[in-house]
Amino acid sequence: MKSIKNKDQILIFDTTLRDGEQAPGASLNTGEKIKIAVQLEELGVDIIEAGFPVSSPGDFEAVEKVSKSLKKTVVAGLARAIKNDIEVCAKALKAAKRPRIHTFISSSDIHLKYQFKKTRAEALEAAIQAVKLARQLSDDVEFSAMDASRTELDFLCQMLEKAIHYGARTINIPDTVGYTTPDEFASLIQQIKNRIPNIEKAVISVHCHNDLGLAVANSIAAIQNGARQVECTINGIGERAGNASLEEIVMILNTRSDQYPYVTNIDTQQIYKSSRLVSSLTGFMIQPNKAIVGSNAFAHESGIHQDGILKYRQTYEIIKPQMIGIPSSRLILGKHSGRHAFSKRIQELGYQLSFKEVEKLFLKFKDLADKKKDVYDEDVESLVDENMFLSNEMFQLIYFHTTSGNKTLPTATLKLKKGNQEIQEAACGDGPVDAIFNAIDRATGFNGKLENYGLKSLTRGRDAQGEVTVSLSNNGDEVHGHGISTDIIEASAKAYLNGVNKFLLKHKKKNSKNAFRVMKGL
Image 1: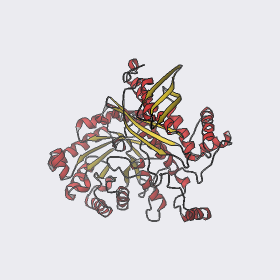
Image 2: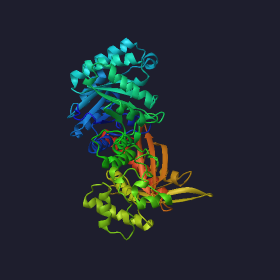
Image 3: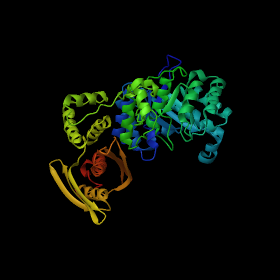
Image 4: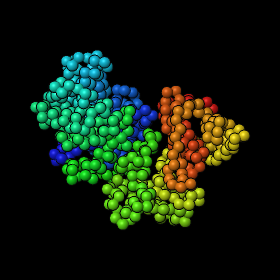
């Protein structure tokens, strides 16, 4: 367990890969989880909850491989207060340099009576046995009393005291359904700290949900009253309305240190990069007015605001954009820009690319600059992100053509490349986007279903780039596709093809002898 040398240090426990992934539609594969985990370690997160190993073979593999990939961060796995859960969790964490078993059981009467059919005595005994077993398998054990904020206080204190006695070195107080308010939660943490005799042997943690929009406020109130670990997620993703947002908690403590004299190990300059990575891999768009990381967080359109910013930044900005990894000003690139300016801008945006990767992107940048009057930071980031998505894909889009009109049958023709093979197809549809999706299905043999389609403008103006995200499903599996272009039909085609390629790669890994078992044609 990470020791706290300074009593005012707050440990950041990130559960993006576990609770965040439980958000409907946010499923991540093992490779994507590893990418996020490595970035979270770079961000400076103290503990990463990598998954719930017993819940599925995929979660077990993810926890196991994240454990092998991280060098210094504590890796936690979640386990119910059940013998098999805990043993499977310990096995998944075996390769971790700093493993933590996080075991939990409900403590509230409403949960015990209606969901688990247990008495308080039975729940208490299960908690004791779970912590004892976990402590035998790991030096670092965290215990959570699920739905603690709706639990009778005497029983909650009794359960937490026993958990500490039998070896838990972190005790977590979850506001599981986001029901409590800051004053109530502050009082609860204060009473736990004052009433449990062995509380000094454990770190008090909190895990707040955002059902009433109070997750961050409740977490800050808990810190003020003795909590020294906060469980949160990137962009606040998670069950229902989500979790406390990591970037908001960290920047509140950082910006208002006059009110909150606490420190974290977070490298704030990695926040924006981490946020974009999670958004891209989950397919969850960040609302423009999202605090800290939203596209409008450091944008100023009002003439009064612009005038104030130009004269003295602090008139309308309380955080320097550089602090979270966003340059202070937008670099406007165009078709006359050279390689050096383009390469420098990529570095300033926080990307580390090889010379060949920059050269490849520069050609795409020139093509984009011919279509757009100005190329903004978001355009450059989009080019890099798109290159990352295309690096391992099996099919590539060579060209497409669509016809559509109110008295014309929408039709699409396209050519794809797979290795040295070129495939041409045509199809009709309800509209040009549907037609091109049908043409891709015919060219690749994909036989899945389009679950969701999302389109947003990434940049400004009439020549703005459009970002399309799609969710595709097949035989119970679901993936997210992502595409960007100034032409929304092209962006749609790229996103759909990106999703098809993910299915191909996923099933190729599962069965190399039958890589296309979800396909009909190839």
